Structure formats: structure tokens, C-alpha cells
Length: 222
Length: 359
Image (cartoon, rainbow over all chains, first blue to last red; front, side):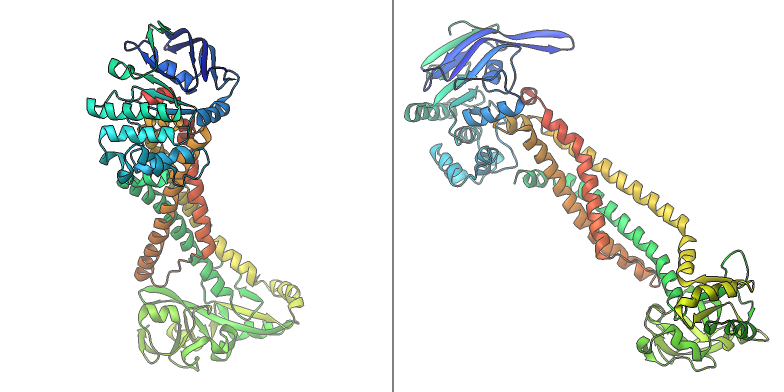
């Protein structure tokens, strides 16, 4: 069976004011269905860029990204958006939530953007992350750790093929970090959720099935 | 829900934006409504049971009292096709703090100016030192049947109040006006002429014109009156355009600021699956809500301004029919959405990666 995520010679060069900055240099990565992969590396090594490209938020300068066996190179903006909606759940590092919406609506938004009626799914997801009783609170009324759990609920309410998490515990204390990672681990075990997670925290990265290291835009241990 | 939540999160900015739209709406409705005052005057003047208006020969239509009434009446009624010639002596008179045109008429001609049920109080003119005023003037000046008015060194009694819509706001016997002006014989400023058959109006008009008099059909005279105020229309049009443009600029700046402030949010929206069209639509929806609130504010401002104007100037007319409300709403909505187009397009095209990197 083909990997859920597969990149070949993935390269990204950022150009600004005539200066070119290579962020990724020919990355070959394969993630199998149900696998939990952690990517570690120093700041600026290209981890987030790799996630942006895999998450179809940006187009590579060279190379290919296949999601669920589908080559995304030929897809236009609309095609990438549809594929992203169907397959990708994304958790950002910070300011994840829309501040003007209560937690339940933040979660529901992911479904509304797909044209689906949320129904009871947002509440079920918030219950799964232990925040049902705070579903009506806006992000300003939640702790940072609670906000991140709401973001996790939002990423998972659409039942994505892959959960991409960019430093999900980067702004959390150890207790909150453990709670978030316990959730991710549980979902991975119980639902067979495929997870690709970026972290500079070895304690977090250790939760994964496989650790991939990056440096200077290249994978050290694919 | 997101557009509504977003505009409620910035109450001051939202209120200012809505007020800007509202002021534009109110300016449009009130100023255009004021132009109806001119139309109202023209309509009243031509709402008489007659086909033609006959004026002395001159280059302009002016208020004058120059025609020998009885002679001209005989001449006019001698023209084949003329059923009746009605002399009117029109003269300015200050009533209720504003100059009005008094219509000096023969009491027997009153039915040509007003229907039977047009009197709401008292009776029509019979002669002597009498006045009939219309309901607008009565309300503005507190005039009632039986009250006296001191003018031209004489005392006149109000004997009747007619429903608004008659040619003038003040009627007096023609001879009474002539006496006050120390005329030695009956004079007329102009004549209303009724043809015996509407099909003969044109022939009658030519015959009157051949006598060296200025003659207009009622429609023509309406157009002459209305067009004499065309410069005011242009000024009002310019003000309305400027008001609309200012609204457009305020909305452009407001929505642009909203998009800049929420760069990272837009990145998150795209990250969780929003398409360009959805982001575009969300921004436009916020602008649409501002437009809706602004339109409501505009209507409230309009009604308030109208009440203030009519309180200060009760004889003015500020006509704002329902269809004009609809036009104002359409223009406001259109202008607002136009102002939001560029910021919405910018938001839709934002690179999600650059947006997510925004601090």
C-alpha cells in the first residue's frame, strides 16, 4: 500500500528582494497510514516549511508531494484546498483560534468551511478533549493549554487522513504539554490517526513511532 | 456567524463605519427629498381646472400684476374654443414667517381651484377682507377660521382652510388684493384658460399666442418652473456624489484595516480549509453587515433630520417615498461592497504561509 504522505526531492526556495533562501533541499519522506512521525531539528532547519508543503499551504519550488496516493503537483489552488479539507487536519503553534468565536464555533468552523452542518460533532470533539463544559467560552477565557486542545479538536473534527501539528506544545507548560500529547497519543492509538508532528522538545518527540531529524533543509534520518 | 462576531468585536470602529454609511444615506435622501419641494410648488401651481396659463408678453415668467383683467378676459373668452378665462392677481405676502404668493381670485372662480370636499374648515371666499389658507400654512402659522391677520395696513379674516394641494397657500378676493395695492381697476398677473374641448387646446393656444401673450400648457408651465431650479439640482447632485464617495473611502479604509489586522487569522482560516472564495466572501459579508447597519442608521438619521427640518421650516416639503428608500439602500450597499472589493481580494490572495508567520 502506498504511503499516506510521500515527498520526492522536495525543495523550497524563498526569494525576497532578490535574495534566494533555500528552506528545503531535496527532501524524500514517506509516512505510512497510522504512523506517528516526529520531526526534530534546530530553528530554521525547514521543519515548518516541510509541514506547509505537506499540508498544501504552499507549493514546492521543485519535487513532488503525494497525499493519499494523489500527486498534488498539477493541482490548482482550488484542487489543493479541496484536498487539504479532505485529508489534512492542521494544528498551529500559536494563535490557533479565532478570537471572536466561542470554542464550539471555532471547532464547527472546520466543518462549515467544508459546507457541512456541524450538528453535534463539535461538541463531541470538545468532550473528547475534555472541554465540553467550556465550549461557550471564547479563546480569551481559556488557558493556553485549553486553547491548544480546542485547536486539536478543530483539526480532528473533520476526521482527516493526516494530522499535522507544528510545535503544538511550543507555548505550553509541561503539564499542559503532557495533556495535549496524551490526547494526540490516545487518538493515534485508538483511531489509528496518522500524525506528523514538529517539536524541538525531545520529551514530546519521544511519543512518536519514528523520529526524523532535519538540518539545513535536509533530512538526517528519513 | 464569523462576520457578525468580527464586527461586534470592534464596536467603536463598526459604529463609526456604520455612521459614515448612514450619513451618506441620509444626505442622499434628505437633499433629494428637498428637491421635491420645487416639484411640489410646480404641481400646486398647475393643479387647476384649466388647460392653459396665459402671461403678459415678457422674456421670463415673473410675478406681475400688469394685465387689465376684464378686457383680457373678454378677449380670451371671445376666442373660439375658449370656455372660460380665470384672472389671478398674485402678490407676495408674509405669512407664518415666510413670503407666500397670495392668489387674488374671484370668489366665483373658487371651484376651479378646489374640489367641493377640499375645504376642511369654514367656507370659500365670498368677498371683502377675507382669506382662505391651506392646511400647511394654517398649521405652520397657527391660523384658524375666524382669526384675523394684519397686513398692508388692513385687517383680514380667515374664513376657510383648504386641504393642502390647491394652487396657492393663501387666497383672497382679487378686488381686495387690488385695493391693497391701490389699483384703480382690476388687474391680473396671469390667466388660467379652460378650453371647451381638450382637442382644441392647441388651436386655442395658437390663437392666444397670436395676440402677443405668452401661453403655456399646464405641463409646459410645470417644466418651466421645475427647470428654473436646475442649478440647485446640480448642486444637490454634487453634494450627494461627494457624500457617497466619502462613504466609499471610509469603508475601503475600514475593511482594509480589518484585513491587515487579521492577517494571521486569514492564514489560519486557509490552514483549516477555507478557499480563496470563502475568505473573499467572509470579508464581503462583514462589509455587508456594516452596510446593513449603516442603511438602518441612515434611515433613522433621515427621519430625524426630516422632523427637525419640518419643525424649523413647516412649509418646506421633504418628500421621501418608499421607493427612494430602496434606491438609497441599494446605493449604500453597492458603494460599501465596492469599497470592500479590493481588501477582500487582497485577503483572498494572501499567502497562507506568510500570513501564519505574521506576529
